[in-house]
Image 1 (cartoon, rainbow, N blue to C red):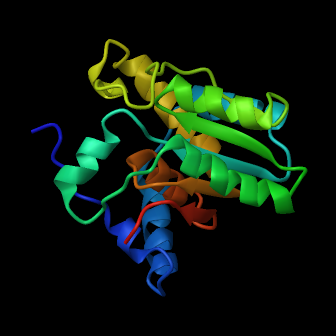
Image 2 (image 1 turned 90 degrees about the horizontal axis):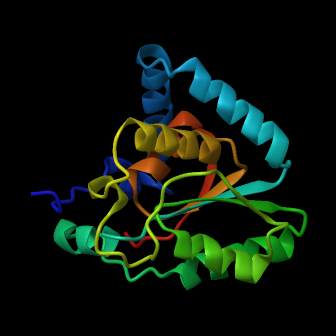
Length: 193
């Protein structure tokens, strides 16, 4: 069943005294056992040096089949819409006007809406295959865009998110991976526990 969803342990640990040791343990495991492709790492480094500033926030917006996935999973019931992410980012930018916003998303509608609100000067997006709309019934991983190149795009977005100062996200494996790759990454979790 492709829509069966079991939330990662990380999401229930956010904000508790178990979060830091858990993220450190997973981060240490990753460093010890996972070797990423040098071309991907070099591209991430070049991109972040060129487009990121010292107050870069990351926003991971997972649309498409996420709402259905959460319905099936039980503990996370979310009616998150793009506006919820925009409102959260507005709060941050109000207090940090020099910040720029890196957006990683599976859909172009989210990016377009952010550009409409914040202008292209504040928005940074890495080239990636995406679905047209937030509520697209077909998730990117079941579309014609899947495969090795799509996997590289997702890993690149995840690594770029991990290089930001703070991530605004809901529960997703991409967001979780960025929190594990950078065990000190600050976060604003948009889900409910």
